[in-house]
Image (tube, rainbow, N blue to C red):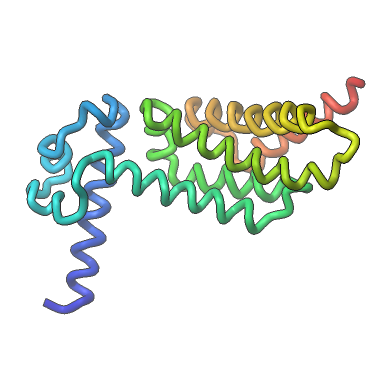
Length: 186
């Protein structure tokens, strides 16, 4: 068998497993998903599953890490002092991976994923804002980062849960509008 054929089969199996896991996560927690159930839904045998993973949780962890890496790369490539491009990229990435993103909203392990995203973005902002907003104390910076980042993420999760009817651009403009209204209300 040629290497190309193996790669194609590997990718197809991987995609089948990912799709099956996402389908099951919409209905139950990762701890309730068995290898047999996942393999049956993916239409592969269990031995094939075990060639790739030890447990369904291993597959979930891999998918979470892949999505995290996409998000991490996004904010590494954008100026966080002008967050429009970063948040637009974030919304676009989550829309591209909408099935998995929605599954993460419903699963218990998804809470850990979203918290990981929140902590990482806050950490990056905290480092940046320490230099930019020297008049704020460490405690104030912590509150500020929590307010902005968790607010953004809460709106993002609501957008996912509501079926993403607005475009990523519309959502980022809406959030900017909210922030401008808060700034102007002082």
